[in-house]
Length: 224
Image (cartoon, rainbow, N blue to C red; front, side, top):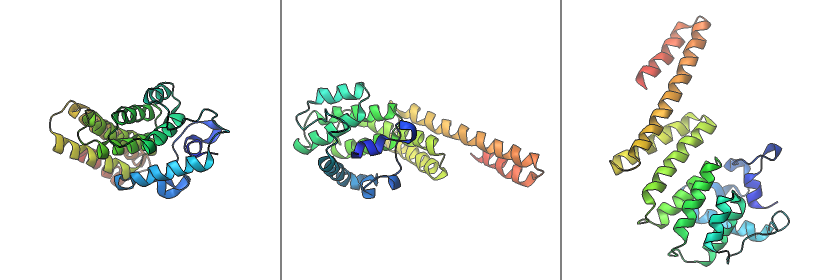
């Protein structure tokens, strides 16, 4: 089975993102920006070794034109689109005028499919490689949005803290932009979701005769 099929497949044949601990090789999914070049190398090597020809007879090559990659994204054929991007990236310089548009399309495609780790990977690639790109503001916002939506999948308090901190850094660094109100809306959405959870916990402990525990969670609501 090819790398991308491993990444997309889940129980019952449903598409989902795998956690880094579930993917091979593990190191390929350290999503930090400094390791993105290593990720691309590992992905390209995996594709080259496995071929994926049995699963996808029309696997794209480095000659696949960028507009065909866009069409794959629009048709929700994201496995093929990812492989085409890797193949195109191997044979075209970083300055290729087609790459930014391909990357933005892949970001949006993965966002629509709720594949937020991959969306953030492409955001990191774009922000690193195209510091003056015309879509830089939108990509920075989509990176934050992916972090918040990922947290809604995992319900991780650690990811909530990280997403909140990232949003505040964006607001401090960029000031008033087209995306400022959207980032604030993400913060408010997180706050309301957390408060709803705290209230449920408070009610739970009240019903079990533990007023101190209930008061603890109601205090968290007031502080939030």
